[in-house]
Amino acid sequence: MPITTRRIYEDPSKDDGLRILVDGIWPRGVSKGKAQLDEWLKSVAPSKELRQWFNHENDKFEEFERLYTKELENDQKKQEGFQTLKEYAQDQKVTILFGSKETTYNHANVLARLLKENR
Image (cartoon, rainbow, N blue to C red):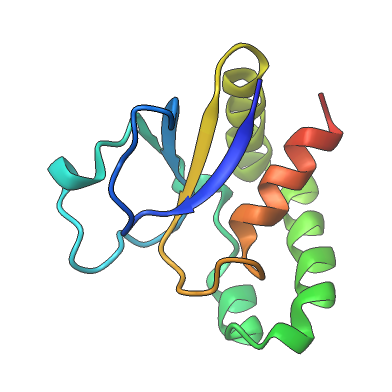
């Protein structure tokens, strides 16, 4: 089934399928009602240390992606969260939501790529 990524600040669409937020911190200015989430999987968010190191500096993205993938592989809670995402994506459309203004170089797109590779 399709896996897409979107900013949580965009209006929900009937085409979103299952809406899952993957940020560790609730996005500013978004009410739970407006978000229309099916699940908030904060366990798959990058660690605070990795997030702060990356600081949305796109030239660091390749290394961020490598380190984040390593976190997903080595942290039990992140593994469980990723497994949950994987199970959802097996039989329904999933939209992975994130709060970042950066729509290309972010952890949600890393998750989407990993999910597509691990089907």
